[in-house]
Every structure is written in C-alpha cells, then in structure tokens.
Amino acid sequence: MLSIKPDHWIRRMAQEHGMIEPFVERQMRAGVVSFGLSSYGYDIRVADEFRIFTPATGQLTVVDPKNIDERAMAPYQGEVCIVPPNSFALARTIEYFRIPRNVLTICLGKSTYARCFRGDTRVALVDGTAPTLEEMAVRADAGESFWGYSLGPFGRVMVTLLEAPRYIGRDALLEIELDHGEIIRCTPDHGFLLRDGRMTDAGNLRPGDALMPLYRHLVRGYEMVYQPSNGHLYPTHRLADEWNLRHDLYADEPGSHRHHIDFDRRNNQPWNFRFPEVLADFRGRSKRNHRVAAIRTLPGDHDVFCLTVPEAGNFALEAGVFTSNCGIIVNVTPFEPEWEGHVTIEISNTTPLPAKIYANEGIAQVLFFEGEPPEVSYADRAGKYQGQRGITLPRL
Image (cartoon, rainbow, N blue to C red):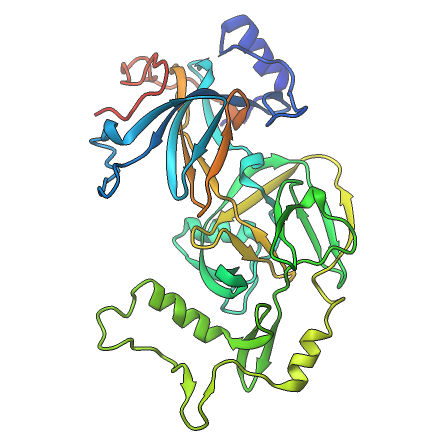
C-alpha cells in the first residue's frame, strides 16, 4: 500500500540523502510562482533553458515522438519564455532528483498556471445539464466529451468543445458571491470576463463589478441564448450546428447539410428572435447573475480542477458568467524508483494567445508515495533516461 509522504520526510530525504538538489526547505511565494517544500509535496522550478516548437514557415511539421525533428525545436535561454498559441515548449527542472528504491512520485501542474476552481463548481453544458468539474474529470477519463458555451470573436456566444477536465492540485481559494446568490470558488488569478469584454483576475474583482452574463430561456420549445453583442436571442441548436459546420462534420454531405436554415422562408425572418416581452425580461436582469456582491478568502488549501477550451479560451459556468480556461498543461511522467536526473517538462499552450512562463519559478508540484520496494527498479534495468542532465528529447 502506498502512503503519501509529509514535509518532514521530504526534508530529511533531501538533506541526508540528496533526494532533491538544490533543496528549498520552505515554500517561497512573495512575488513569484511559488516553489519549495509544501505540506505534502515539493514545488519544482523551471530552469531558463527551453526548446520551443517552431516549425519552418509554410512547412507542415508532424510531432512524432519516435522521430523528433530537432530543427523544429528552437533553443532559447532567458528569464521569460513565450510559448506560442496552440504550441508547446520543452524545459527542465532546476532540481536534480534521486528517487529512493521504495518511492514513486506523481507530478502535477501548478494551479498558478492552470487557474482553477473547486471541484464542486458546475459548468453549463449545451445539453441542459450542469455537472461539477470533479464529475467531468471522472467522466472524461471514461472517454466522454462535453460541449459548453464560450464567448467568441466580436462578443458572440458560441458552442465549444470543453477539453481535458482534470484535477490540478491544491491551492488557496477566493469565494465570489454573485447578486443572485450563486457562489464561485476559484484561485485568485482565475480570469473572469467583464461585461465590457475585458478579462480580469478574480483577485482584482470588486463588489458591483458587472461580469459577462450567460442568459438562457425557453421560447416556443427551443432553448434560446441571449447574445450580448446585439441583444437578440439565438437558438442553442443553431449554435451547436455551427460547431458542426466549423469542424467539417458535414463535409461529405451534399451542400452544407444544415439542420436548420438561416431564415424562415415563410416570413423571411432570421433565427434572431426578438420577442419584446422576453427581451425586456433579459434586459431587466442588471441585478440577476452578473454582478459581484461580495468576495471572501477561504481558509486553507483545497482540491482544484479546471479544463481547456482551445477554440475560445473561455467557458461559461452554470452560475451564469464566463471565465478563462486552463490553458497551460504541464506534462511530466512519474519519477520511477531509483531514477535520477533533471526532469524534462513539456509545457503545452492550448489557448489562442501566447503564454508566458517564468524561469527560476515554480512550474509543477511533486508528490512522493512510499511502498514496498519493487523487484526491479529503474536503475536495475538501466533505463535510457537515467542520469539525464538538461533538456532531453525522446529516445527510442
């Protein structure tokens, strides 16, 4: 049976057996992405050496783990690394690890880069349900996909695929109360869309701030979404159909194969419904789900989750507001028993915007689990990544 190891065990193993070098025996937070020893883990730092995926202009480069094109992995050294939109970079840890024979580690991305919510936060889905992020993470592991609402170009609500709902780690949270009583619990750096289209961190919100609203209403049996860009109502099924068209799901059908035409030919009216009584209700909701009523700090650390929306970079909560997605994914394999070396990290930017990574600051959290020693350790089988230093590309 594996048991997670606490701070005093990590400190002893680092200081007496060189498990982590260099070792910082307390968590450093002031003005930096935190790093160092935590209650049940160690926050590792990223060095200032990077390899950024940069294919030649006009050239299609396939990322093949069996045959990495080193020409497409441009070397870079500096205090700040900019990862291009929908791209990735390789980096390494400052720390050199020596894992004991009876220990396995798990590495998780830091919530500072992930921008996370508590697991009981509910997400608005286009099928009318609102599962929690924790539920979505479990269902995603079983192969399920999810579609939700995002704010796209020109401030128009659209349907998007919500990818990779997942557990991130533990972090301190804020509690944001909205004017209709809904509570949102998130990390202080999580971005919220304001009613004027700007994005601001949760920690910078103030009571009275107006957030971008998601309003839904049944009209003639259809769920309609209020479009804040033009004040009209638009059917959710048309938004879903537009997603299908954007992703060429009808490419093999004659014509566009739209399930719903753009105009009702009987009266030449677009699918932008303008029922005065319904719109009056929406426009009168200035105090009904998009203004901040109060902000509080929650004591302690909490399990946090998030997801990714590559197409738009934001998604809607069931509470009726739009927030930024978790765009930075840190991919690291477990450190096996008796492995040693610098850790090579893959940093994926799944957003449509450039992402900034700070060298010499925290990038991920390592958890240590102790169990019975294995019959064969990584050192016993002379693993090909044993003793690696610097950024190491995949080897066959």
